[in-house]
Length: 334
Ligand SMILES: [Zn+2]
Ligand SMILES: [Zn+2]
Image 1 (cartoon, rainbow, N blue to C red):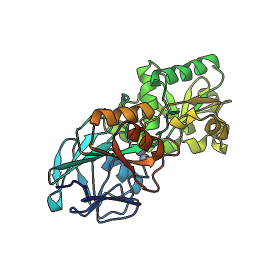
Image 2 (image 1 turned 90 degrees about the vertical axis):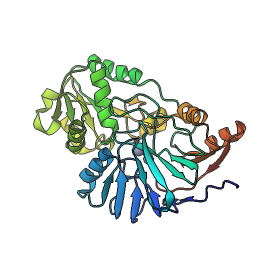
Image 3 (image 1 turned 180 degrees about the horizontal axis):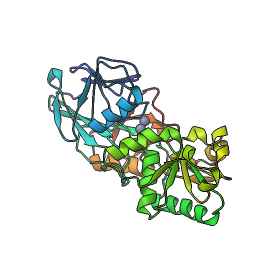
């Protein structure tokens, strides 16, 4: 029997698992959604039923103030869906609670990676290589120009900028879910035990991470202290706060941003970033191609980013591949 994998159907607003009549990371409300992780381009509110890890469900509850229809599934637990489909959630190493979803039906195995990375992250379990027939992979940084340096290197840059100007503070723009907490945890790992100051918009997510067992050390709110007290300290804020009025309350901040896009000078200039930190929660080019090699699927379906270069790489390496046209999945700040 020819394998056409027609039981799984990519549509512009999500991936349809036909026999189970459910959708993976749908961008519009559906009856049954399987959600890979809590970022807003994947996890939207308003579904009848939402299957996700307990951590992702907690993040969604914080964001959408409702947990109606929540179906928790632990990593490696296999869930039977209708139509003879089963789903297993496997760590993706992207943010707390993030999962790849392994779907099995009629002897075929399809993995949807969601967003993922291969680097160690102190805030979530690492990506696990799992054999399958079809690998549906993200390609946010799917160009050879994207090669993320070791995170220790970027953290050292941040700490030396801080030490060089004790009368200033370093203001770091970081995505409020995942990046901010990873940055803080990496600073702790590097031995920076001083209080870290955060923008009010980060507080609830940081507290949730701590409730879920991720130690972030001493965090204080910028709004609770006088300007002078912030000198010589690190302040973490959402990227949108970097150039707005809010930052005037900081003592002569050195503006930094932690993002894979900081590899692109023009993006750093646009945000008036003095200290670009190339720290990403997505796989870079080498991690993307290495993952295809490691998983070694019969087919690779590429989505969610710069598909063309990955498609060409697969063809050059005699690997069957296709680009999917999903829309609305882009992590601008990541
Ligand atoms: Zn994401
Ligand atoms: Zn994404």
